[in-house]
Structure formats: C-alpha cells, structure tokens
Length: 266
Image (cartoon, rainbow, N blue to C red; front, side, top):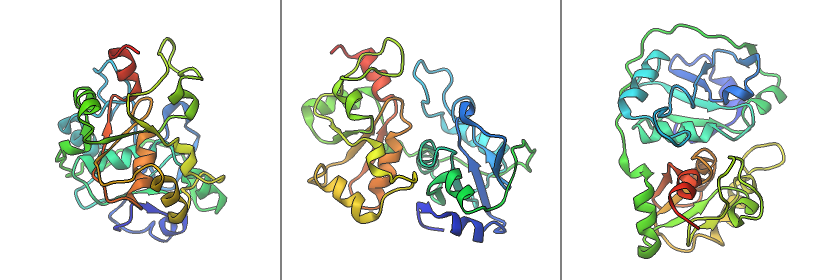
C-alpha cells in the first residue's frame, strides 16, 4: 500500500490482510455505536495529543505516541488505514501524525465511514479490545512541524507560504471563532484554502484535476508550505489534498490560529 488515500472498495478487498490495521479517528463527541469491522479506536484528543499543552490537539512526543501505538497493537510492519465518521475530517490529521512519527505505510479512507456505509460493507458494534502489544517505534521528523516562532519569523523572511484551512469568514474575521473569546483574523501574509473547497458533496476528496485547479491559483512557486487552521486538524485535510498535486515541502503549524490569536495582538 503506497497510496495516501484509499477507497472503501480497496479496504473491503484487503480486510483479511494480516498487516492491516484500521483506525477509527472519530472525535469522541461524534462517535457512533458501530464501526468498521475490526477497527481500533484512535483517541486523538486524550491519548495521542499533548494534554499538558494549553493549546488543543498538540502533537504528543514520540515516546508517548509510540507507547500508545504499541498498546493498540500497531507494529512497524502495519499497513494503517484511518477513517472518521464525518467523511474527511480528523483522519488526515492521524495520517500526518504517523508520517511525522516515521511510519510511511498509512492511508486515509476516502469518504470515511459514511462512504463505507453507503457500500453496505461489514460493520460491528463499537468495542474496546485488548491487543497483543505491538513493536511500533516512533521516529520523529521535526521538519513536518512548525512552531509559533518559525511562523512569526517567516512573516518578514517570506521563506514559506502559510495556507489557512479555515472558512473564508473565519479567515477574514467576519464570522466568530468557535472558541469563546478567541479573536478572528489571520496570520499576516497567509492565504486561505477552506478545507471544504477540496471535498465533493459526498464528503470525498475531489478529483486530482479539480484539486490541481484549487491549488495552482494560489501556490505559484516551490516555496515550502505551512498548513494552519483552528487547532491543527483541518490543516491536515488541505495538506493531504496537496500531496497529490504539489511537490513542495510541507509542514503543519501545530498551534495554528488558537495559539497565534492568543500570543499575537491584531
């Protein structure tokens, strides 16, 4: 499995692969009582994020990430497919997390759980299992992550292009942020590609040709790209879409707008 996005048909045909690990990355508040058969719940917020950070969804360190992957029975040989129940929302974040921790064999289920259900493929009651401890080993790749200081210095240096995945209203400060008390607006010199612009009506990624059209009007050179959003989740939706059409180096500003708006005055 080399591709970064796989179809429900592909996943269904590979369910018996002994190396396959299916991760349900649905946020806890959105969880349902059914899941893809054999799925393992990947708790982004409370298990695989840095819960000591004052900012939400910050990437855990390699030790914590690796330890919790072993508990889930994940091995270095695992072929991981990630999905969520909103179609394409949290799953690209998990894809990026594994890539950042040195695991290349990971893909996102295009259309997520809604697409799986649409095909009437096999489901089961959501459950927690105990797995044989895996041998996963995390190897953190620092170039995939950018911090506040890097992004701030980039405003004057203009060495990278910051792409914001929030809605146009939030980017322009004309609609409120979902987090109470957080100001609106954007990082100076950043550009806006709302993540929903990259998805079709069914919640799948648009075709490669359509994705290319979205990006080519905004990304005009080979500068590195830094993806941002509200708290680092939907930034990865746009990053994954760009993988298909752009060769630029890519990273995520992990603190995203939640950190920026609290640390920088308008």
